[in-house]
Image 1 (cartoon, protein in one colour):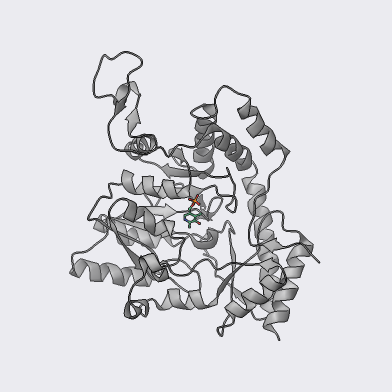
Image 2 (cartoon, protein in one colour):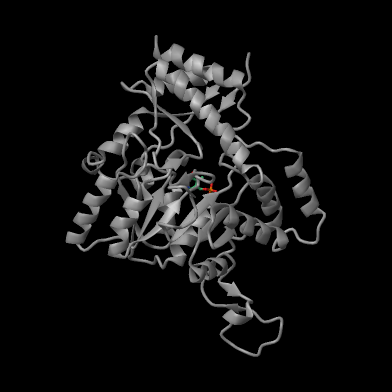
Length: 385
Ligand SMILES: *Cc1c(COP(=O)(O)O)cnc(C)c1O
């Protein structure tokens, strides 16, 4: 019997192992030089002025919301289809969350739905302070259109790019901050690169960067130019706001830095796998999520759309064959904690359609040609029965 195949997993090589071992043998396990190097390398890669490392992508989202001033009573919007962390970050700040419908063909925020929701919110004086935009599956949203709608209204944008490290949009890397205030990445093992746990926020605003750095470490600064009291001895530090211990350790940063050197190779491999699925599945009349013509996806997920309410049956049949797919995601508003009324659910036609049909197929750099053929053959066999 063949080995089980999962929808995603990391690739770790000897360089990665050595990078972590070297750090273990160094003077610093945390708050050492690896974190700063990882931050600089990632900022260089995406083309942002600043990058701030933190303990995971969820902490990165929380920090991004805090740094943009989200507080109790504020309103934040996010995509109906994302991981729950895209919504929870607002609630951590005491804000309320509301969902924007998606385009069922791309899985990303529908610009038409956003336009309509903004118009309604203007009438009821309930515009959001921040919108968390999600690049589902690694495929960029229409950031220019979203930014043109939001900027004139003073709404700040956070890109949840946890799927999209390595992706580009209009010729620039996602994370360069051309159309947003903050962009957030995760280094969980299923993502483009891993640091086991880890996250990063990129921004071009130096004040936001300063706040992010402080908030990730208790709200404390030691930086001479940032201190409120002058002429203090060298041991002196100040807590200037209520922050958290959301730091990344040097062990994690060493792994992340080593992985970053392989990011482009990983993305190339994912792209090839995506193209092979595209070709093989079109023969079986199955469609994948549409790609943004203005972008290049990071291919974090390959989402196939299975019509006629057959998705759950297909999922189970594949699982019985040890091919473990996943649904990314059930709409957040259907989670018991976030549940909205049935009448409200009916207004999300895009998210509901996507939710009925979507299935994420295995894609990761180490997926062999043979394994992918097994996935394709099994899937075609099941849907053509
Ligand atoms: C993975 C992920 C997160 C959270 O990242 P963690 O590092 O696991 O905390 C947030 N949003 C999206 C879209 C993700 O895929």
